[in-house]
Every structure is written in structure tokens, then in C-alpha cells.
Image 1 (cartoon, rainbow, N blue to C red):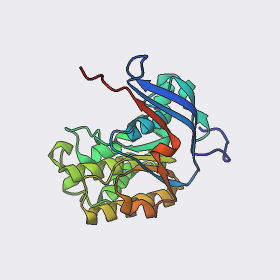
Image 2: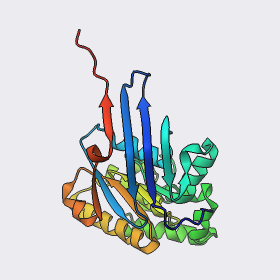
Image 3: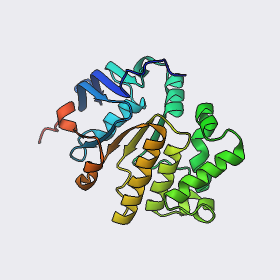
Length: 245
């Protein structure tokens, strides 16, 4: 269970320093101070390849910074052992990955249910017994336009890119995680499905009181969020340039 720290932000990055590559810093990202309040929705914008996905991976604990504090829901996750950090992520975060990360040979419904096998807390929030968790997975798929009685039974590999994206969203929502992280979740959806997706995203957020941080290049949807977060204003990014021979 989380510590009783209701006054703490959902996300607080302090003096973060992370680099890819050698000590010559092929790619380096530094964050002096960034916060996302509990229950707040923020949309992160910035150029392609500028480091948005890297920043999300640091927030999720998938990457560990060389320096600094990564405080999520009041807990310092950068100091946790790998196994504890993985468990924390499973219990408290719903993540929509840019590449979806679905298991291709499992059905859409089974993909949605996956987080519950790794998190008793989220399993309990979904109804604990299998019949109720199955019903919740079907409800989420239906709400996102994936008919649970037909498409829900198909293997993930047989679904279109847009359908896979919505299955990944349902997987992130199940079990009512306190923090939802979404890496360009509407990029493969047409305008109609984008609208329906965002309706469900905010409906889920409002129903559970979750905090939301989403990356998107679509400036038209930014007005739906509490705050627009410009990457270059919160991060110092440096990229090593190859010398021309």
C-alpha cells in the first residue's frame, strides 16, 4: 500500500540526469523540477525524437536516472530494487505504450486482463473473482469500440493497428490505477475514433480520480487537458552530433 501522502503530487521529478550511450553523452536529458498534481491531466508536447518517450520511461521506472529523485504517488521509485519497482508500476500505473506491447497470440480480452495477474490490488479493484474481472475487461473493450463478443475473442495479432491501440488502452484502464501514462495513444486512430477514445480516457480518469500524463502531436486535443506541458520548458536535452568526415 502507498504511504499516506495525500498532499504529494502524482509525479515529482527533481534534479534528474539521465543519459543514453557512453560517458560522452550521446543523448542526455536533465529535469530540474517537474510536477503533475494528483487528479490533474497534462498533455506533453514536443518535436519528434526530442525525448518525450524517454521522459515517460523515467517516470514509469522503466529507466533509472543516473542522478536525481523520481517520486511517484509519494514514493521514491528510483531507489527501489528492480523487482519492487516493477511491482509498484503494476499496482499503480496504467501504461499505454507507443508500440502497444500486446501479446500477439493472446485474445484481446486476455491481453486486457494481463495486469491483473501481476497486481492483486488491481485484481481486487476489478472484482477479484474471474467472472467479474472478465466482465470488466469486456466492458472496457466495448466502451472503446472493440466488440467483446467478436473482436474480443480474436488474437491480438489479427487486429488492425487502431484496434490494437484501443485494446492497449483497455489494458491500461483495468483495475483503476492511480496514474495513467499514455504515449501517443491516438496516433493510429481516425478523428471519430480519437474522439471516442478521449471520451473514454477522461471518463475513466474522472471515475477513478486518476492522474493522467499523455504525449501527443495533435494540438487540437490539447484544450481537453488541464495543462499543456512543453518538453523544452521542463527538460534540458543534449544530443551528441557526429563529426562530418
